[in-house]
Image 1 (cartoon, rainbow, N blue to C red):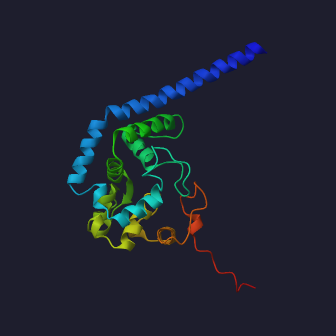
Image 2 (image 1 turned 180 degrees about the vertical axis):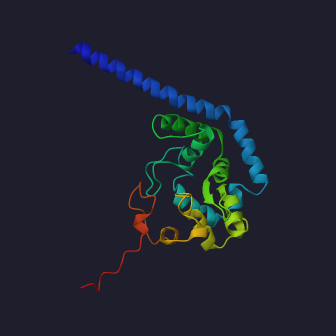
Image 3 (image 1 turned 120 degrees about the vertical axis):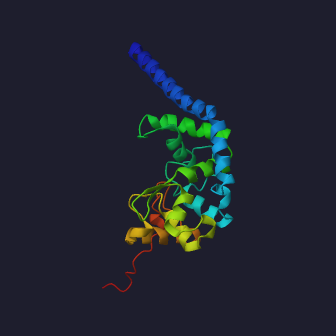
Length: 228
């Protein structure tokens, strides 16, 4: 029995070491490419396509929906309701570190990569790169759009900073399901998403849990007071 327990302990220790090594590879890769990432973020910012182009209110709404703990966390966050299990930094890591990301073991490297980004880049640089790489859906010609600022031009014909509050909230509604939610194909799902984000931004509701990325806690409940 002792031999079995010892063998199990050794296997567990080896597994932990393997996980840490794989996460460490992601961390090292992020650190190793930090200079390139910084240069890319600087170019985007200089071109008016960075996080700095958003107004304070636009930034507040975006982070409230995508990653409420972004300014405080170090790449990981499982504490903020509505944030889901993936932070902005982890989401960016999927696109910078992998040609094709699939959940599973790659999540370990993704986590290490995210921590590496947080230790190498500023929050503004991370958000700028996220804005440039986020999937936004198809334009009126059916072309797939990558990038928050590019989507603003494609959908509304103007830069993010010129959007109305309603247009900006609609734009923020898209990344959760870019293949389904589209301003050129308005439907109930997009209208509901917009309504929920607007209520969340106004402080009228709160998500039900960390996993409530669809903001079910902000859905308007049907009035059943007169039923029956």
